[in-house]
Image (cartoon, rainbow, N blue to C red):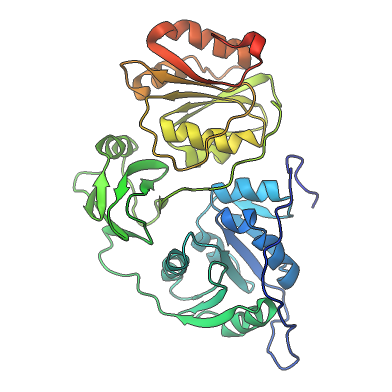
Length: 377
Protein backbone atom coordinates (compact mmCIF):
# COMPACT_ATOMS: atom_id res chain seq x y z
CA UNK A 1 0.00 0.00 0.00
CA UNK A 2 1.30 3.49 -0.75
CA UNK A 3 1.36 6.16 1.91
CA UNK A 4 -1.60 8.57 1.98
CA UNK A 5 -1.09 11.71 -0.07
CA UNK A 6 -2.00 13.90 2.89
CA UNK A 7 0.68 12.64 5.29
CA UNK A 8 3.06 15.39 6.37
CA UNK A 9 5.41 14.13 9.03
CA UNK A 10 7.00 11.18 10.70
CA UNK A 11 6.85 11.67 14.48
CA UNK A 12 10.00 11.22 16.56
CA UNK A 13 10.83 7.72 17.74
CA UNK A 14 10.23 7.12 21.46
CA UNK A 15 13.21 6.83 23.73
CA UNK A 16 12.92 3.30 25.10
CA UNK A 17 15.61 1.26 26.78
CA UNK A 18 17.43 -1.20 24.54
CA UNK A 19 15.32 -4.33 24.10
CA UNK A 20 16.57 -7.86 23.76
CA UNK A 21 15.85 -10.14 20.82
CA UNK A 22 13.48 -13.04 21.33
CA UNK A 23 15.42 -16.02 22.66
CA UNK A 24 15.18 -19.31 20.80
CA UNK A 25 13.31 -20.98 23.65
CA UNK A 26 10.54 -18.37 23.83
CA UNK A 27 7.37 -19.82 22.23
CA UNK A 28 6.18 -17.86 19.20
CA UNK A 29 3.18 -17.88 16.89
CA UNK A 30 3.86 -19.01 13.37
CA UNK A 31 1.58 -16.22 12.09
CA UNK A 32 2.50 -12.60 12.57
CA UNK A 33 -0.11 -10.93 14.80
CA UNK A 34 -2.50 -8.14 13.90
CA UNK A 35 -1.99 -4.89 15.82
CA UNK A 36 -5.12 -2.88 16.65
CA UNK A 37 -4.13 0.64 17.66
CA UNK A 38 -6.22 3.01 19.76
CA UNK A 39 -5.77 6.72 20.47
CA UNK A 40 -3.67 9.49 18.90
CA UNK A 41 -0.90 9.66 21.52
CA UNK A 42 0.69 6.39 20.41
CA UNK A 43 1.15 7.87 16.92
CA UNK A 44 2.12 11.39 18.02
CA UNK A 45 4.85 9.99 20.31
CA UNK A 46 6.30 7.69 17.64
CA UNK A 47 5.49 4.56 19.64
CA UNK A 48 3.27 3.07 16.92
CA UNK A 49 6.15 3.29 14.45
CA UNK A 50 8.51 1.74 17.00
CA UNK A 51 6.12 -1.16 17.68
CA UNK A 52 5.72 -1.83 13.95
CA UNK A 53 9.52 -2.00 13.60
CA UNK A 54 9.89 -4.35 16.58
CA UNK A 55 6.90 -6.64 16.09
CA UNK A 56 6.33 -6.56 12.29
CA UNK A 57 2.54 -7.09 12.55
CA UNK A 58 0.78 -8.59 9.54
CA UNK A 59 -1.73 -5.73 9.64
CA UNK A 60 -2.03 -2.51 11.63
CA UNK A 61 -5.65 -1.43 12.14
CA UNK A 62 -6.57 1.95 13.61
CA UNK A 63 -9.70 2.14 15.76
CA UNK A 64 -11.21 5.44 16.88
CA UNK A 65 -11.68 8.97 15.51
CA UNK A 66 -8.74 11.14 16.59
CA UNK A 67 -6.37 8.18 16.24
CA UNK A 68 -7.13 8.24 12.52
CA UNK A 69 -6.08 11.87 12.22
CA UNK A 70 -2.77 11.20 13.99
CA UNK A 71 -2.23 8.00 11.98
CA UNK A 72 -2.76 9.74 8.65
CA UNK A 73 -0.16 12.33 9.64
CA UNK A 74 2.35 9.66 10.73
CA UNK A 75 2.86 8.34 7.16
CA UNK A 76 2.61 4.73 8.39
CA UNK A 77 0.90 2.06 6.28
CA UNK A 78 -2.26 1.30 8.26
CA UNK A 79 -5.93 0.42 7.82
CA UNK A 80 -8.83 2.37 9.26
CA UNK A 81 -12.00 0.98 10.81
CA UNK A 82 -14.48 3.35 12.44
CA UNK A 83 -15.44 0.92 15.19
CA UNK A 84 -14.48 0.41 18.85
CA UNK A 85 -11.39 -1.79 19.40
CA UNK A 86 -13.45 -4.67 20.82
CA UNK A 87 -15.58 -4.80 17.65
CA UNK A 88 -12.47 -4.79 15.46
CA UNK A 89 -10.76 -7.53 17.49
CA UNK A 90 -13.87 -9.70 17.58
CA UNK A 91 -13.84 -9.97 13.78
CA UNK A 92 -10.19 -11.10 13.55
CA UNK A 93 -9.43 -14.82 13.67
CA UNK A 94 -5.62 -14.44 13.61
CA UNK A 95 -3.51 -13.66 16.68
CA UNK A 96 -4.27 -10.04 17.60
CA UNK A 97 -3.31 -7.53 20.27
CA UNK A 98 -4.34 -4.03 21.32
CA UNK A 99 -1.73 -1.24 21.37
CA UNK A 100 -2.54 1.85 23.44
CA UNK A 101 -1.03 4.80 25.28
CA UNK A 102 -3.37 6.01 28.02
CA UNK A 103 -3.34 9.60 29.25
CA UNK A 104 -2.24 8.14 32.61
CA UNK A 105 -0.97 4.71 33.64
CA UNK A 106 -4.26 4.01 35.41
CA UNK A 107 -6.43 5.11 32.48
CA UNK A 108 -4.40 2.87 30.17
CA UNK A 109 -5.00 -0.14 32.41
CA UNK A 110 -8.68 0.75 32.81
CA UNK A 111 -9.11 0.99 29.06
CA UNK A 112 -7.73 -2.51 28.63
CA UNK A 113 -10.10 -3.73 31.35
CA UNK A 114 -13.07 -2.25 29.47
CA UNK A 115 -12.06 -3.73 26.11
CA UNK A 116 -11.36 -7.14 27.67
CA UNK A 117 -14.77 -7.15 29.37
CA UNK A 118 -16.34 -6.97 25.90
CA UNK A 119 -14.38 -10.03 24.73
CA UNK A 120 -15.44 -12.53 27.41
CA UNK A 121 -14.80 -15.71 25.41
CA UNK A 122 -11.55 -14.54 23.85
CA UNK A 123 -9.65 -12.48 26.36
CA UNK A 124 -7.21 -9.75 25.37
CA UNK A 125 -3.50 -9.06 25.00
CA UNK A 126 -2.73 -5.36 25.48
CA UNK A 127 0.54 -3.56 24.86
CA UNK A 128 0.29 -0.45 27.06
CA UNK A 129 2.98 2.10 26.27
CA UNK A 130 2.22 4.51 29.15
CA UNK A 131 3.90 2.13 31.63
CA UNK A 132 5.68 -0.26 29.23
CA UNK A 133 3.50 -3.24 30.15
CA UNK A 134 2.03 -6.19 28.26
CA UNK A 135 -1.26 -7.19 29.93
CA UNK A 136 -2.87 -10.61 29.51
CA UNK A 137 -6.55 -10.15 30.31
CA UNK A 138 -8.71 -13.14 31.26
CA UNK A 139 -8.13 -15.97 28.76
CA UNK A 140 -5.88 -13.89 26.52
CA UNK A 141 -3.19 -15.57 24.41
CA UNK A 142 -0.29 -15.96 26.84
CA UNK A 143 2.10 -17.27 24.17
CA UNK A 144 1.51 -14.12 22.12
CA UNK A 145 1.85 -11.92 25.20
CA UNK A 146 5.16 -13.56 26.14
CA UNK A 147 6.50 -13.03 22.64
CA UNK A 148 5.45 -9.37 22.67
CA UNK A 149 7.04 -8.86 26.09
CA UNK A 150 10.39 -10.14 24.80
CA UNK A 151 10.20 -8.19 21.56
CA UNK A 152 9.47 -4.90 23.31
CA UNK A 153 11.17 -5.36 26.68
CA UNK A 154 7.85 -4.52 28.36
CA UNK A 155 6.88 -6.19 31.62
CA UNK A 156 4.40 -9.08 31.34
CA UNK A 157 1.45 -8.71 33.74
CA UNK A 158 -1.80 -10.60 34.20
CA UNK A 159 -4.91 -8.42 34.20
CA UNK A 160 -8.09 -9.25 36.07
CA UNK A 161 -11.35 -8.00 34.56
CA UNK A 162 -13.35 -5.88 37.00
CA UNK A 163 -15.96 -4.37 34.64
CA UNK A 164 -19.37 -5.71 35.59
CA UNK A 165 -22.64 -4.66 37.20
CA UNK A 166 -25.95 -3.13 36.10
CA UNK A 167 -26.25 -3.28 32.30
CA UNK A 168 -28.35 -0.11 32.43
CA UNK A 169 -25.34 1.76 33.80
CA UNK A 170 -22.06 2.79 32.18
CA UNK A 171 -18.91 3.64 34.12
CA UNK A 172 -16.38 6.02 32.58
CA UNK A 173 -13.24 5.31 34.58
CA UNK A 174 -9.81 6.91 34.63
CA UNK A 175 -11.27 10.43 34.72
CA UNK A 176 -9.40 13.39 36.16
CA UNK A 177 -11.66 15.69 38.22
CA UNK A 178 -12.41 18.88 36.30
CA UNK A 179 -11.97 17.48 32.80
CA UNK A 180 -14.89 17.34 30.32
CA UNK A 181 -16.87 14.14 29.85
CA UNK A 182 -18.61 13.38 26.59
CA UNK A 183 -20.88 10.80 25.05
CA UNK A 184 -20.97 10.35 21.26
CA UNK A 185 -19.02 13.58 20.84
CA UNK A 186 -21.32 15.74 23.01
CA UNK A 187 -20.01 17.25 26.25
CA UNK A 188 -22.39 16.31 29.08
CA UNK A 189 -20.48 17.83 32.01
CA UNK A 190 -17.23 17.73 33.97
CA UNK A 191 -15.86 14.91 36.08
CA UNK A 192 -15.87 15.37 39.85
CA UNK A 193 -14.31 11.97 40.60
CA UNK A 194 -12.14 9.29 39.03
CA UNK A 195 -15.22 7.39 37.86
CA UNK A 196 -18.34 8.83 36.24
CA UNK A 197 -21.47 6.66 36.32
CA UNK A 198 -24.28 7.18 33.81
CA UNK A 199 -27.62 5.40 33.61
CA UNK A 200 -30.31 4.81 31.01
CA UNK A 201 -33.24 7.01 31.93
CA UNK A 202 -36.75 5.61 31.85
CA UNK A 203 -38.46 7.08 28.82
CA UNK A 204 -35.21 7.60 26.90
CA UNK A 205 -31.99 9.54 27.27
CA UNK A 206 -29.37 9.18 29.99
CA UNK A 207 -28.85 10.65 33.44
CA UNK A 208 -25.76 11.06 35.63
CA UNK A 209 -25.60 8.86 38.73
CA UNK A 210 -22.33 10.00 40.29
CA UNK A 211 -19.00 11.65 39.57
CA UNK A 212 -20.35 14.29 37.18
CA UNK A 213 -21.17 17.97 37.37
CA UNK A 214 -23.72 17.91 34.54
CA UNK A 215 -23.98 20.27 31.61
CA UNK A 216 -27.72 20.17 31.16
CA UNK A 217 -27.73 21.65 27.66
CA UNK A 218 -25.34 18.89 26.62
CA UNK A 219 -27.64 16.23 28.08
CA UNK A 220 -30.51 17.91 26.24
CA UNK A 221 -28.60 17.79 22.94
CA UNK A 222 -27.83 14.12 23.51
CA UNK A 223 -31.51 13.48 24.10
CA UNK A 224 -32.32 14.98 20.71
CA UNK A 225 -30.38 12.10 19.16
CA UNK A 226 -32.96 9.58 20.33
CA UNK A 227 -32.28 6.44 22.34
CA UNK A 228 -28.64 6.04 23.41
CA UNK A 229 -27.24 2.54 23.88
CA UNK A 230 -24.82 3.04 26.76
CA UNK A 231 -23.18 -0.33 26.17
CA UNK A 232 -21.88 0.78 22.74
CA UNK A 233 -21.85 4.61 23.04
CA UNK A 234 -18.52 6.42 22.56
CA UNK A 235 -17.79 7.63 26.10
CA UNK A 236 -14.61 9.47 27.04
CA UNK A 237 -13.17 12.14 29.31
CA UNK A 238 -10.47 14.74 28.85
CA UNK A 239 -8.78 16.03 25.71
CA UNK A 240 -9.17 13.81 22.67
CA UNK A 241 -5.81 14.88 21.24
CA UNK A 242 -3.07 17.05 22.72
CA UNK A 243 -0.89 17.51 19.62
CA UNK A 244 -1.84 20.12 17.00
CA UNK A 245 -2.73 18.86 13.51
CA UNK A 246 -0.62 19.34 10.41
CA UNK A 247 -2.06 21.79 7.88
CA UNK A 248 -2.74 21.46 4.18
CA UNK A 249 -3.91 24.01 1.65
CA UNK A 250 -7.57 24.04 0.62
CA UNK A 251 -8.09 21.15 -1.81
CA UNK A 252 -11.61 21.50 -3.28
CA UNK A 253 -13.14 24.88 -4.16
CA UNK A 254 -16.40 23.55 -5.59
CA UNK A 255 -18.37 20.67 -4.09
CA UNK A 256 -20.86 19.71 -1.40
CA UNK A 257 -21.12 21.18 2.10
CA UNK A 258 -21.31 18.54 4.83
CA UNK A 259 -23.34 19.44 7.94
CA UNK A 260 -22.01 18.14 11.29
CA UNK A 261 -24.43 18.98 14.09
CA UNK A 262 -22.99 18.26 17.57
CA UNK A 263 -21.58 14.89 16.47
CA UNK A 264 -17.98 15.52 15.40
CA UNK A 265 -17.11 11.85 15.90
CA UNK A 266 -19.09 11.05 12.72
CA UNK A 267 -17.03 13.27 10.45
CA UNK A 268 -14.96 10.54 8.79
CA UNK A 269 -18.15 8.73 7.78
CA UNK A 270 -19.60 11.90 6.27
CA UNK A 271 -16.75 13.72 4.53
CA UNK A 272 -16.24 12.32 1.03
CA UNK A 273 -14.00 13.30 -1.88
CA UNK A 274 -16.54 15.82 -3.22
CA UNK A 275 -16.68 17.83 0.04
CA UNK A 276 -15.61 21.46 -0.35
CA UNK A 277 -16.24 22.40 3.29
CA UNK A 278 -17.96 21.52 6.55
CA UNK A 279 -20.69 23.35 8.45
CA UNK A 280 -20.03 22.57 12.13
CA UNK A 281 -22.72 23.42 14.69
CA UNK A 282 -21.58 23.78 18.30
CA UNK A 283 -18.38 24.93 20.01
CA UNK A 284 -16.71 21.57 20.58
CA UNK A 285 -18.00 20.17 17.30
CA UNK A 286 -16.39 23.13 15.54
CA UNK A 287 -13.08 22.51 17.33
CA UNK A 288 -13.09 18.78 16.51
CA UNK A 289 -14.08 19.33 12.87
CA UNK A 290 -11.50 22.09 12.48
CA UNK A 291 -8.76 19.85 13.91
CA UNK A 292 -9.61 16.85 11.74
CA UNK A 293 -10.18 18.86 8.57
CA UNK A 294 -7.04 21.00 8.90
CA UNK A 295 -4.66 18.28 7.74
CA UNK A 296 -6.93 17.45 4.80
CA UNK A 297 -7.26 21.04 3.64
CA UNK A 298 -11.02 21.15 4.21
CA UNK A 299 -12.34 24.52 5.48
CA UNK A 300 -14.96 24.77 8.21
CA UNK A 301 -17.77 27.24 8.86
CA UNK A 302 -18.34 26.95 12.60
CA UNK A 303 -21.42 28.22 14.45
CA UNK A 304 -20.66 28.64 18.18
CA UNK A 305 -22.11 30.36 21.23
CA UNK A 306 -19.14 30.33 23.60
CA UNK A 307 -19.68 27.21 25.72
CA UNK A 308 -16.58 25.36 24.52
CA UNK A 309 -14.92 22.86 26.87
CA UNK A 310 -11.49 22.63 25.16
CA UNK A 311 -11.32 18.93 24.28
CA UNK A 312 -8.93 19.38 21.35
CA UNK A 313 -6.39 21.92 20.10
CA UNK A 314 -8.26 24.43 17.95
CA UNK A 315 -6.93 24.68 14.39
CA UNK A 316 -8.49 25.44 11.01
CA UNK A 317 -7.67 24.97 7.34
CA UNK A 318 -7.39 28.00 5.03
CA UNK A 319 -10.84 29.26 4.04
CA UNK A 320 -12.39 28.60 7.46
CA UNK A 321 -14.66 31.01 9.34
CA UNK A 322 -16.07 30.72 12.87
CA UNK A 323 -18.97 32.94 13.94
CA UNK A 324 -20.36 33.44 17.44
CA UNK A 325 -24.10 33.77 17.93
CA UNK A 326 -25.17 37.09 19.43
CA UNK A 327 -28.04 36.58 21.86
CA UNK A 328 -29.17 33.32 20.21
CA UNK A 329 -28.22 29.66 20.55
CA UNK A 330 -25.80 28.11 18.11
CA UNK A 331 -28.29 25.27 17.65
CA UNK A 332 -30.99 27.59 16.27
CA UNK A 333 -28.72 29.56 13.96
CA UNK A 334 -26.96 26.38 12.90
CA UNK A 335 -30.19 24.74 11.79
CA UNK A 336 -31.08 27.84 9.80
CA UNK A 337 -27.69 27.83 8.05
CA UNK A 338 -27.97 24.07 7.46
CA UNK A 339 -31.02 24.76 5.31
CA UNK A 340 -28.72 26.73 2.99
CA UNK A 341 -26.42 23.72 2.60
CA UNK A 342 -28.51 21.94 0.00
CA UNK A 343 -27.27 18.75 -1.61
CA UNK A 344 -25.96 20.60 -4.66
CA UNK A 345 -22.39 21.67 -5.43
CA UNK A 346 -21.38 25.18 -4.34
CA UNK A 347 -18.25 27.32 -4.47
CA UNK A 348 -17.14 27.41 -0.83
CA UNK A 349 -16.07 31.07 -0.54
CA UNK A 350 -19.21 32.26 -2.28
CA UNK A 351 -21.40 30.09 -0.03
CA UNK A 352 -19.71 31.43 3.12
CA UNK A 353 -20.24 35.00 1.87
CA UNK A 354 -23.93 34.19 1.33
CA UNK A 355 -24.29 32.84 4.87
CA UNK A 356 -22.64 35.92 6.39
CA UNK A 357 -24.92 38.21 4.38
CA UNK A 358 -28.00 36.30 5.55
CA UNK A 359 -26.97 36.31 9.21
CA UNK A 360 -25.74 39.94 9.26
CA UNK A 361 -25.35 41.24 12.82
CA UNK A 362 -26.85 38.13 14.42
CA UNK A 363 -23.32 36.72 14.55
CA UNK A 364 -19.80 38.00 15.08
CA UNK A 365 -16.83 36.61 13.14
CA UNK A 366 -14.25 35.33 15.65
CA UNK A 367 -12.00 33.28 13.31
CA UNK A 368 -11.35 33.99 9.64
CA UNK A 369 -8.59 32.15 7.76
CA UNK A 370 -9.67 33.23 4.28
CA UNK A 371 -7.39 35.25 2.01
CA UNK A 372 -7.14 38.72 3.56
CA UNK A 373 -8.45 40.47 0.47
CA UNK A 374 -11.66 38.43 0.74
CA UNK A 375 -12.03 38.43 4.53
CA UNK A 376 -15.16 40.00 5.98
CA UNK A 377 -14.23 42.88 8.25
